[in-house]
Length: 119
Image (cartoon, rainbow, N blue to C red; front, side, top):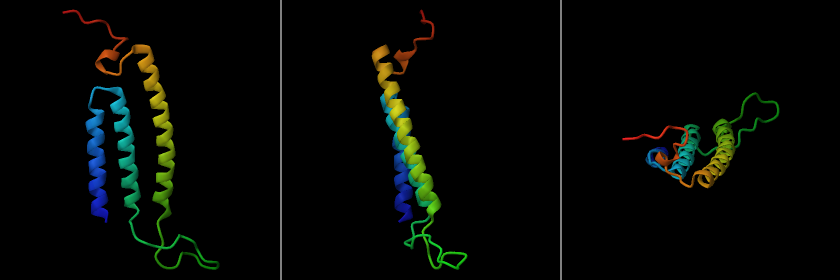
């Protein structure tokens, strides 16, 4: 099962790089979201995909008995999803503001602070 997820992470990362290399800001934002999802999936898979019980320690024991699920990657991914959603919301509002102010989302046309190049 892990090779399938490794291929999925590679596909998501490749699609994210493709979108981020385009010249449009909105595609860059969607590429950033795809890249964060690829990173989340890679972290989640790194915790091994084994079926197991919840990591609960019985009373009087020092360690869980038997095979248990790894809770750390799950907690990291959950935190990363929340942070990624906040970043996406901020970037989407910033993109909308850039579009209303500049009238374009093309990266080459958004160079307002640079001096005009005369040929």
